Image (cartoon, rainbow, N blue to C red; front, side):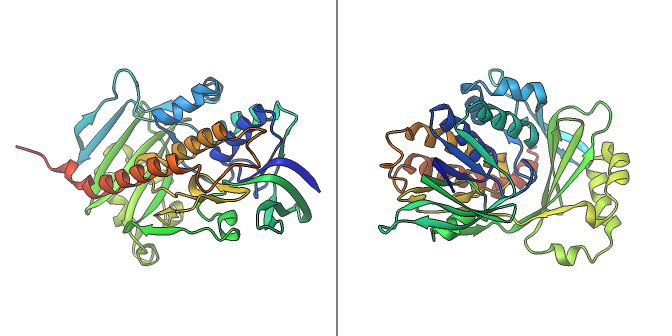
Length: 359
């Protein structure tokens, strides 16, 4: 059995940052991750200025930059194989987003937390049950570490375990799912020589395609398709589909032909957003995708999780852990998240209008 002040489930960016911030306050923390290595589950990797500011606030950004990141210098809209509109960053910000490899971000966060003896990381550990006392307050978790049962008692349980949150399900907290009418195909290819750090957008058959330059010389392709259509799409010939990508971005022809050769080279993301009215119960709280899943639009997900961690850490100290009203303390973040999700919907609905050329 283990006894700590706070048990955080999910070692993604939100959970890892919160663990570090609490450990720094002399709060004992255990961070549970169901996979056997940090960063094994893919999550968003683009920082906006808000996420950047949080990492700089805690003197973490420079350490991440030493490992490698990439600032986007421009946003381009393309038609018929040519760029027709370019957006540059505000001079004071200097970028239109920063690609941070998840492994780099999590390594810095975990290494920072490990400097404190009151922090403990448990990999390959799955939550099986939430523990409650006779009053219904949550008092910890029953988990399996490498297949062995372990009881972790805590004053507070934080669910930072993503869109399919086990903690949310076990606590029977509400969730409202909103479908957005599309799914997303991801692919990753090496960037051509002299490719500028940028975001490029186009429309093919009325569907959005986005190119995101990544650190270490890669490009991530995000291709919107009709919701639920991939099973049918992958039965069709592959070549005509990929030829459209090459026509849209001729500069990518060689790397696309060498690296995307079948439907298996795409990864499917089931796109939806979600929100929960209740972010916690006595002794339990949710953050990040566990309580407000974002769509990929605008790359808000990572940054929202970091903001949750920053906000919750400001409410928790040795004196407030047991008295924290987690059902109410998320009111500020709930309002901000609702605004962001509304912005995402507006961006998705108005995307095609970016390609209307005024004459």
